[in-house]
Length: 253
Image (tube, rainbow, N blue to C red):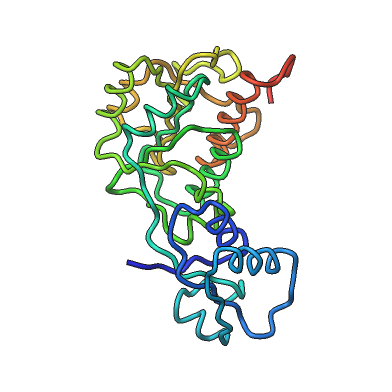
């Protein structure tokens, strides 16, 4: 199977990561030679990948959103890994494991944003449900600015069951939820092996997932809006974990 990646960052990071086969690079005829485009062409030459000039309408036929970017790549499907491999690698990393579980996030833009943040803060791996959730599509790769090309992502059958298995392996489960029993995020000690669970855009964490979390954290809200977008809230929480583990003397974000 093959799909069309689009966007300068997604194409470039797929080339840099080298995790999936790139069949060819497609460049709109007469495209402005920006630094990003020049870098893509350089990487393609280094990896001996063919570059083909096309009309903009051909990109539109391959992938609707590709037309506006002017650069695309025909690539193999996204290389998911096994969840067990993610957990093993996290535990063998010499660092406190930091995993991200997504409880049926369905919007590709939200998923891409969360994955971009996850890669930026060094998350060891991400689990997403096989059903009723967004998968890793070209739109998600573009929304993540190509970050997903460097991440270990696994499809999991059941989030609640995955949580049970993680607990047995010494991983603490922290759910992000605006609930009465939730602690303010900056009051929690995150210097433990942990998995952060982020719920869906509409309903948050599912009931069983919420019940199986070791603790819930929430972002204090001062304004009149009662909650944040899932990708924004998840990104803040991930950066809080990174700050507490790696920054010295930092105040809450």
